Length: 248
Image (cartoon, rainbow, N blue to C red; front, side):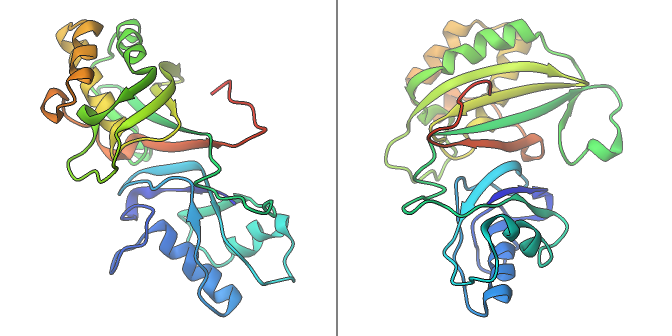
């Protein structure tokens, strides 16, 4: 399944006790359809307030009455309006939305404006000043390659290794927005928001990419700047074997 959701009113993707989560509401829908609990596995565990336009998930099913491509319509009839299955198909044997993923692409939407339209407030971070995109892209290039991202991992990140491979890290103008799009094999906890917040601080202070590279190499959380808020971040795409990696 390919999923889209407005993450504003969710406590993230992963099931949590006494919390409304994306995984939780989808599993509730599938349980109603199957008549028994069904566990779903997602490609990425988005945090509280983070959205998705291309989350991917898979689950086992013993329902023969619904064909692969019909699952989207069938499941949507049981889901709340802030979650939608965009498309569905029967997975190949051994497929795992998480383990089979080659690449995850996140996009963060900045809105440089004195006054922002209220209907966009849940889906972007409004900033008062338009930053220099060329300077930001010089900073963003620091993260391309394989690095230890301990500096940009949130406190409490439990991953044994913080080494991640970033294939693309770049800012783009898209309509009224300035979008930071980053593609990597995987991410440490709250990494994208930490990268963005730090780069905006460096750009505002006129600090060079070499200093950012030193902060990355230091592997010390204190070297990072403030994290960007969750509301502008989207899990945009998950790439699997046989799919085009670029354009991102």
